[in-house]
Amino acid sequence: MAIIPGTDSSQTRSGLFAVLGFWWNWKQEKKLSLGFDLIVYAPYRSISGFIQDLEESGEIRNGELEHLQNLHETAIQEANKIMLTDAPLLYPPGQLALASLRRSNEVHRVIDFERYLDTVLSQQNSPYSASELLDLLRSIDYLVDKLKVPTIDDMKPIDRKLRMCLDPSSQDESKRREKKSKKSKRTA
Image (cartoon, rainbow, N blue to C red):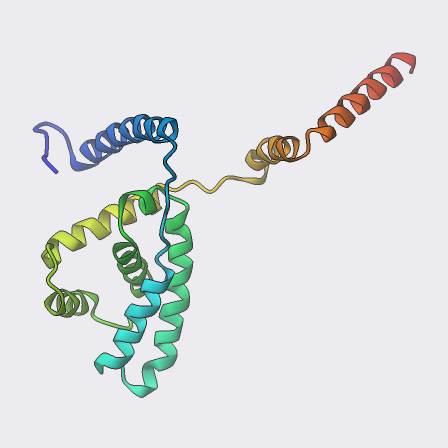
């Protein structure tokens, strides 16, 4: 990512995401018009694989297996948050899993994450260096941090529209109820 002189990195990053959002909407329209389906792969299996790799690597002693289980559970919760963002559309499941583990490890401090990342990268022929991968994981963190979970009041109109789409006959019934309530208000 190039840094524009006179701006800080957060301005550049938000501008980048605005451009990506516009680009994404345009590409999505084109895919739909051509009849393409978009498939998103979840990071849960990758998280389990990384946890198993940690167990087998010898970095975790037998007494720390309970801590590793806590790390796994928290990583699943972090993956749930990540799945609510655009990150699954932008990053592969392995990177999402590493971001989940990194966020979980910030809470539990079970492993030296950067050292583990170096060992993972040395075992594979990765096109990324550890610092590049950490930058990617930070960008996933940024998406999670700017996530706004809708409130119940925000969800009510969406739920109402969804029910009307699933059962159009309920729309007729609701109109009848509205007419009855208006008539009863007039007579009262």
